[in-house]
View 1: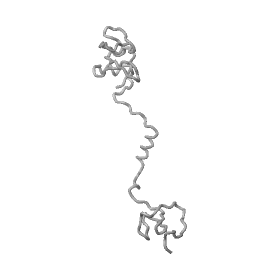
View 2 (view 1 turned 90 degrees about the vertical axis):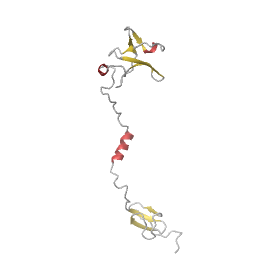
View 3 (view 1 turned 60 degrees about the vertical axis):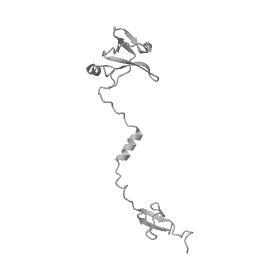
View 4 (view 1 turned 135 degrees about the vertical axis):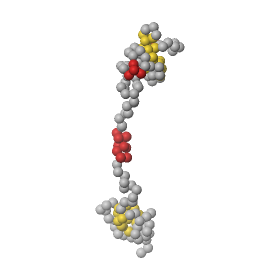
Length: 150
């Protein structure tokens, strides 16, 4: 359960006390003005001084009906995913069945200057290390490389 921060509370004798002037050393019990559940006094650097519901000592039935309650469910609502998280989840959900198997493509072996289709292993020199992908539809010139002997 999450509640709004409360700036004013009731004391045991029914007087109002504001969080910004509540004495720090005072161990006086304070209560929610709406549901009469006990409150805790808090001080933070970012949010200042405020009261919050004491969930350990409060009556759950009264807490569920308190107007300071932010969520009607005891479970926290999950925030909506960011566009990056959404794109990441969509990518993970895609079918990756082709990732584990080698794909057939057009290659050029720079060792023997042979252009071939298929898996990445030159059928002439039997090396896969010297093969590089060639764009589809683009043919490399059939010339001998400068390091080959004529």
